[in-house]
Length: 99
Image (cartoon, rainbow, N blue to C red; front, side, top):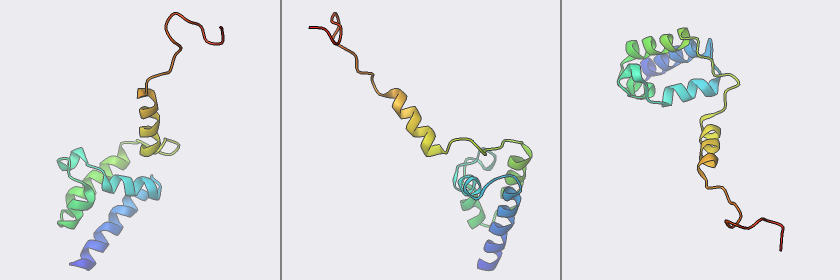
């Protein structure tokens, strides 16, 4: 059972690494996936559902969506959060630097 699970994970890694970095592959395995009913691929592999995960991985590679050069998820979250912070402005009706 463990040998099969490792072999399945290795096969999925090979499929994804044809087009993606190790970091992108790891992210794909850990993220919820619409094609898997919003289950995580790594969880589905753990339950022995290799065929469905393989199909989802191949669809992802075939989609042509390439993540190289794209910001990481944590960088994107940080940039988005900074846009949500209120901007500090001067007191209404006064100009900064005068008085």
